[in-house]
Image (cartoon, rainbow, N blue to C red; front, side):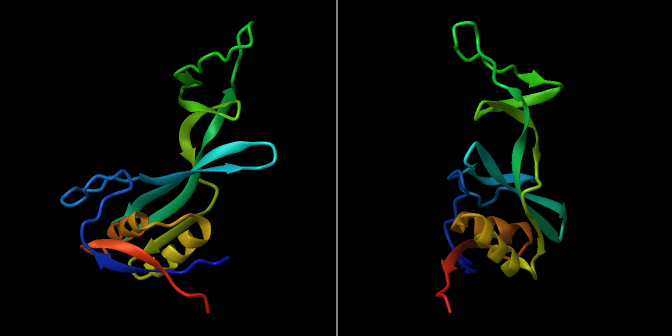
Length: 158
């Protein structure tokens, strides 16, 4: 089902963690959200990352951490704590019996956009992620499309 959204300016924006953004300089890349995904045999977490390849554009990516190894168990059947590092890569946690970490791997979808293609980015995001007012604001801010806060509105289906 295709979702459509429009952006409009509002006041009093708070970011995805609830902190006031006014006067704060955004650092990139940023994680805008996460969600649990699953198949019949596995579960994993995906992350929505926003980065700035240059001053006039931004890149949205759906990412996940790589599997670094399997969780191990002691002789009594209890899980052993994962190490802090495996093969020089930082361990982030354990998901579905796999130790995960390293750098985020972003091969699950991406969209490169500018101020002019912001509506297309919002539409792509609506098709691929649960978009929110905060995320819409982050996209607009990343490409300089607004100085105020941004929200989303679902458009009626035609």
